[in-house]
Amino acid sequence: MMTIEILESDVKNNKLSFVLKGADSAFANSLRRSVLRDVPTMAIEDLEIRKNNSILYDEMIAHRIGLIPLTTDLKGYNISEDCKCKGEGCASCQVKLTLKVEGPATVYASDFKSKDPKIKPVFPGMQITKLLKGQKLEIEATAVLGTGKQHSKWAPGHIYYKNKPVLNAGNVKNPEKVAQACPPGVFEVKNGKLVANQALLMKYDLAGTIEEASNGEAKIEETDDFIFYLESFGQLSCRETLEKATETFESQLIEFQKLIK
Image (cartoon, one colour):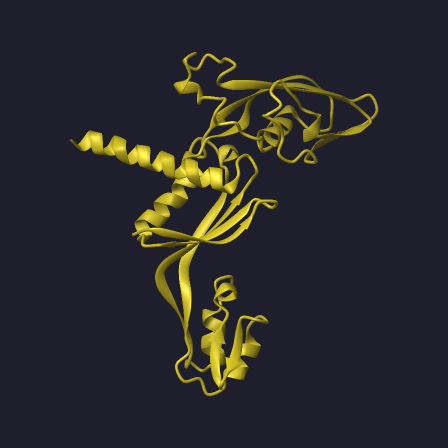
């Protein structure tokens, strides 16, 4: 049976780590890919640059703005092709944001004014450009839902996994040497034996260090469990991202099942 053990849930910094048990590498990688490719988020897709006499070309301004993460309301918006407007654009699939700044000033993401308060830049302090006296930047932007498989600007975060490590200490002749060669707190010596702090052991890649320090008497071995690390870019929380990824993955499997019947 598949189970999940939460290791760390840092809501403030949008980070989550957990151990996935009872799954194989195919499922683990499918979950990773689903997070990166299939979770819809809001991002700016179209720009109308009405005024720009800053030092940056329109293309550079557009590129920077497109990569600004936006808070996402999955219940309030549809993906364009699935919307009742059939992709023509309406209040159910897109939202307008406007920006108007005159120098001297630094233009920040927070200068965008959204027609929907639920859709706004995740990091207000992101710099777009600087304006000198007399320079102006005036933009109308359109944000839509999209997925990472279309463009990385819609990716909800970064995720990776590795097999859970365990220590096989055997009969280490000099356990103190091994403990000193590794980061503080990872190992301690009890009754002449090397004992690992499992929580810290999972954070480091110490296989080579341990084998060298112990002359091959101790090794790090991999288990069949997977440790996942997820860092959200802020459009959705880590839990929302995982829930949507598994929901999408399940719907894809159902669709595949229908196709092979």
